[in-house]
Image (tube, rainbow, N blue to C red):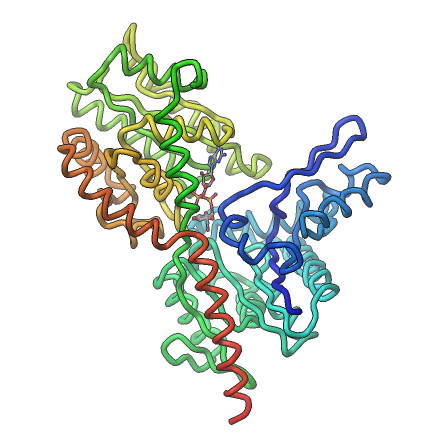
Length: 483
Ligand code: GDG
């Protein structure tokens, strides 16, 4: 029986080791949810890094980690601290991540990191090949594993391979600056189907392939010597019902059942019943436009002092990649900005920004989503932005307004939101006023359309569409070979 092999940098597992005791729990992120119909017992395996380096796992527990991962149909790729430094913090997050998000000034070109990236991609590919049997489908995920498709193809020319890029693909003029541009494109082209969130990323990729590698590109197909590669856009959805149901449950909670965070949010509403809560949630990443958002909020309060004590920005920033210097600098910048603005505008009974620098349990995430009136998401560049979609899914009464950057992939599917340019403070400020004043009927009209769309194109549908197209691409490829 054929199976699906899923490969991503990280496994959907949480591993904890305390006092030589091992605990392995499945972590249900969006990707894991979307793939669950494939990732059932026996139908699939998931290959990736466990999240702990070899140095962090006591030797006597290594076999245990392996066995416990296997129970979840997962296979752990063992990586050393040095490998994680060069492959993950190095090439993936100091070269590809900034370059693909147009932060060219942050992009480093360290040859040693590139060598480690290649070696680690080879490790993933070898692990896949150990489990691969003819007829299996292989689905490789994201920018950390760009070379894996071709590494598999070289050994298993018949393999059916899909690749999905979760971040933007930059325009040719930006991509061409990468010293290893040919190798990266050739690596990805090992796949039969290459997926992106948006049509723009797809076009950028095709243009780089045709201009750098000089391959023939017809519409969305690339003709190689012995096969055709298909490129398409598959905008990723969310586990809609999970967020919808959580919001409905949340609405039923009695005061005793609510969390401490919820009680604080409720207090705020009791004190100032007509005040609006503005929410932002993101990893602390320079691509997310967090500093710009705070500055735009300052601009708004400066120019519209009538909203002092009438609005509050609730910001959840999740720690991320904190040993990369740009992330450390950004953390300091945001701490300073929040401190300065709170110092500048606070009154005895009000602080304009509530800032949480931590990761919150799902329950609290829902408290935030459900209690806030406006979501203000201002990425400078973002492959998709699932937070925008989750905010809409949690609108139990269909009220609330989403303000979303046009630079997020999600903006292409969410025209009913207020779409802004994250660099235009005047526009953000006007959008805030429009959102605050928007009649309830208009909010509901907009959200109704958005909810219907997001419910239909869920993460499960996204994964099924990709896999179905991959199967069709294979049939197409076989007929191409026999002509
Ligand atoms: C990359 C691309 C693309 C956030 N804080 C907490 C928490 N979250 C969850 C959210 C959401 C997810 O994390 C963040 O997803 P995004 O899509 O917004 O952003 P990235 O992490 O940058 O993801 C992005 C995505 O891949 C998928 O392809 O959309 O463009 O950059 O689901 O809910 N979850 C919990 N606690 C938190 O504190 N439990």
